[in-house]
View 1: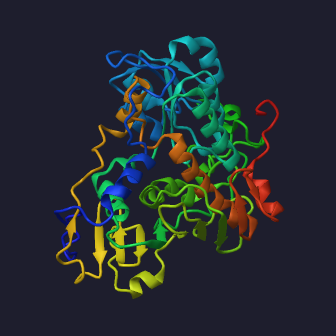
View 2: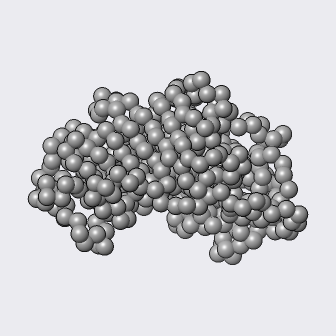
Length: 442
C-alpha cells in the first residue's frame, strides 16, 4: 500500500476469503497467467539465446522501451526524426538505422525475431501489421492502434501467427494491482455491478496549429504523417502534441485508458461492451477534449452479473460525497458488501469499520519477472503468455477507443463486437475504421 495513505485501515494477510479458489483461477487466466505443457507460440529463440529485436520509434517512450530490452540483441532502429532519436542513436551507435520501416524489413527481415513499436498512435498499425505478417513477436505501445478496426486486425493476426505479443500497459506488473485483482476476484466486497474510473487530467484542446513553418532537416515529414491525410508541417503536431489532434492521437482518455481501465478489465474479466455512451463539451472536429464522461455496459458472463463502467477525466462527486479518500486513486469498485478504492500503488476498503479486522488472501498472482521480460521469455518459448498479450489487451484497447467514438459521434450506441457495428449511428460507424491516404491502403 502507498505509505502516504496513513488514514486507511491496513489490509492484513491471512486465510483465503470467500470464493477465492473458484474466482482466482479466472483472475490468473484472464491476464495470461496460465501454464501450458509447451509454448503456444509458433516460433522463438532458445531460452539461452538472445532475441534479435528491431525498434520502430526510438525517441521519447521508445527509449524507455529500449531500456527494457537491452539484454537482448538490438539489431535495428527505425525513426523518422533524427533529433528525437538522437538519445538512442548515441547510446547504441552500432545499431543499424532506418527511417522507413518497410525498407528496414526489406533489408533485414531474416535477421529480426521481434519488433517493438513506440510511434505516435496513428502509426502503430502499419509497422505492427508488417511485423505480424512476417511472424515477428511484437511489443506495441498503447492504445495499440488508432481505431477499433485496426486493433481487431492486429489481435486476430497475432493469434493466427501464434506470436508473442505485449501491449505497453506496464503498470499491469505492479504488486498492488495484483492484490486489487485478488480482492475483487475473491469477493472481498461481494458482487460488483458498478465501477468508476478516472484519469485526473485536463490536457487537450490545444490552440490553433502553427502555420508557415519549414520542415526541419532532421525530420521526414511525409513518413511521420504515414497513413494520415497530407498536410503542411507544423510543430503543433510534431514531436509531441500530436496526442491532442484526432488525426494523430486519441487524447488524454486514449493516453491513460489502457493503464487505468486495465485494473477493472482484469479484476472483473471484462471484454467487449454491448453499449457505449459519452458526453462532454461541444465536440471539436480536429482536437481532442480536455475532458469527457463515458459509460460502458458489459453483460454478465457466467462468473458475474452485468457491470457498468464509468470512465471520466475527474472522479465523480458522488464518491467524495460518500466520504471516500480518493488520494492517489483512479478506480472505485462498488460492491454489494463494500467498496474498494484503488490506484496503481494504493488500495482502501470501505466501510472502514466493517473491514477493520479484514484478513486479505495470501498473494496468488505470481510476481512479474519484469513487464518486458514477460514478452521476451514468451518469445523464447516460455509456456506462460505475456500478461497483456493482444487477446486480453485488444478488447481493452477497443473499449478505450469506443469511448472516443461515442464522444465524437455526439451520441451513444449499441455495440456488436462481432461485426464491429454501432447500431443506428452512422456517424459513430465512420470512426470505427478510417481511410488511409494513397500508398498506405490496407
